[in-house]
Length: 140
Ligand code: AMP
Image (cartoon, rainbow, N blue to C red; front, top):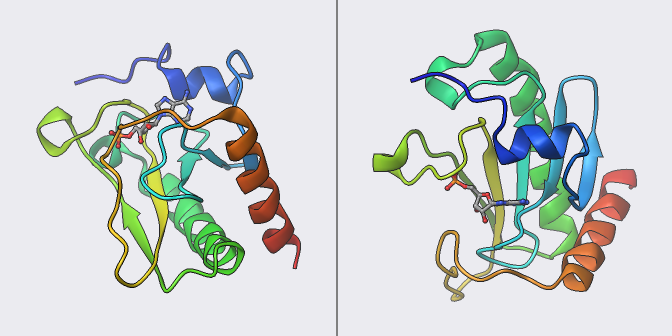
């Protein structure tokens, strides 16, 4: 299995398709999932392409996990979450649909279920408002 540089997240990285960005540094980008499983669902991706975790450069993982942690804490604060679900799928059999490594950061509230994975598209205005809340929490 090889990495396809034409995948949708590679296009987001290049700015060829729009995204609601919440965080960016030299190695990583974080943006809103367009089909959130809960309000505040963010994806964290490394800039260096790999298909998923299985073929990733370990140094890329080392650069990315601190950002997953940073974003998880900001999402927890912004959405007053009781917990944070981190998910990461490798290959279609495991549920992967976009083949550029990404970590799902999903706020959880006691007693509230999750919407389906890759379910319904959220409105742009809602995603923009959620991104703003997370960016504000990241500044704090
Ligand atoms: P996975 O199934 O783990 O590969 O997850 C891919 C995720 O990407 C799903 O949660 C989709 O909702 C999300 N997604 C697909 N296209 C886009 C896009 N253009 N912008 C943001 N998120 C996307």
